Length: 290
Length: 122
Image 1 (cartoon, rainbow over the protein chains, first blue to last red):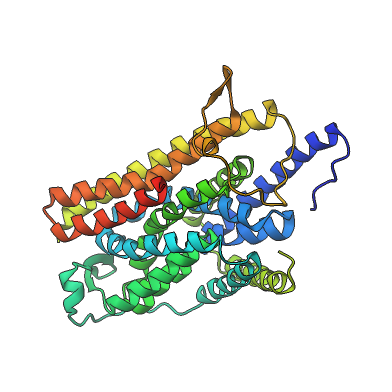
Image 2: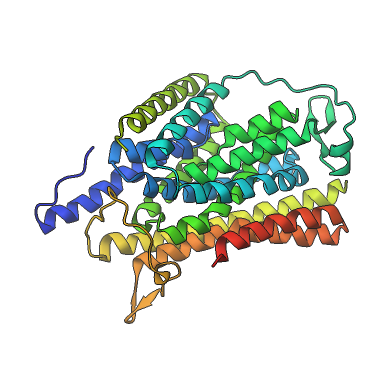
């Protein structure tokens, strides 16, 4: 899917429509699969743009970051109504993610694209691996003085009625969130997998609470690096438009379909796609192809 | 923890987010259609990075010589999109203040400061 060589003005005109159409279709597919599998679409958009369309890594990261803000902010209102997400835990951890994202966005200009490619590849492999990690909801919550002071607790609906929880290992969770923020700012992704790691694994929050709160946080985290991306010229309007609209449309459609269908096979396939893209990103980064 | 007040806050937040995203998507779509079918029709070189845009490129005028500039319209949509989560955090500062939750007024105030710094930084 390499771009046609500029030969005449008519070819260039064809080139724009063809290129845009192919990017739009890829983005819709990425958003759809991302929503259906719960892995997020942003994570495959950057490697797809870089590896398939030969877009410069910085333009790809810029377009992906904007699509991440759109999908996170447009996420399902139903989770809120059911009372899964926790606004205080989200806000507290956003201190870590926004500061991290600011640092990450600064780093993009200082770290070579080859290194960014390799970090991106490793993050992709981690995301794929983490999607198959066992999810165990903790049943007992020992009292935690710091979490108590910061009001990092709540209750959520279960089959046995509403159950209370309180965060554990607050400093560790905060630290991992800072790393999630750096990755988001550096790579233009939501880094949902790392956010869930902080809340589900470190802070022992119920899985549903972790995923929905993470989704709420992603938009705010991404907004912290968007200003810097804009002033650096990473946001190419003509490229951002099809990526943002495509991923948004795909993820909205995917979220609607998710209510009706179960997708274990699709999840495996998409995880394998992510692994392949991750390996390819690491290879391209290491051999200087980026 | 004021659970009822929090739920109300989150409902308002998600409504606000959806409105912002929908508005941004409509503006970007309008700009994009204009860009594709009434632009110069040339595929820009995305293969090579062209570096930092001028200050005029950040928030450019939408009307250039009485004609709508499609890229500026897309950029306006992107700005609306970025403003959406920032507005969300500002609303949280207000809601926590209404609940007299001093810790969270400070916490959300820090997040808002980071976002505004990133956006308006010199």
